[in-house]
Amino acid sequence: MTESEFLTLTDGIFTRIEAALDEAELDLDCLKMGNVLEIEFDSGEKVVVNRHVPNQELWIAAKSGGFHFALRDGQWLAARDGREFGATLSAVVGQAAGCDFAFAV
Image (cartoon, rainbow, N blue to C red):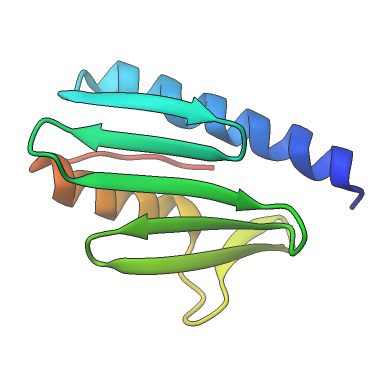
């Protein structure tokens, strides 16, 4: 995949994340700055989604840890344990928000 294809693909994912957060009506602020989408909750806790262009990976940083995801066979899967990006994001946002949240790529 070219760099521009990666950026277009991940722009779409960032847009869908923002839409899902808006739809869930959670108490948070969401700020996109270049390659970073920062989600800050009223508690002060943060979840950061970052796209790492050189490696063509999506990264999630949360209180529970850091996760790196690469696109394999049409799915964003974690390098360490094979967890899926959407499930991981759902879990860390739900934990930070104190309620259920669902996101699917």
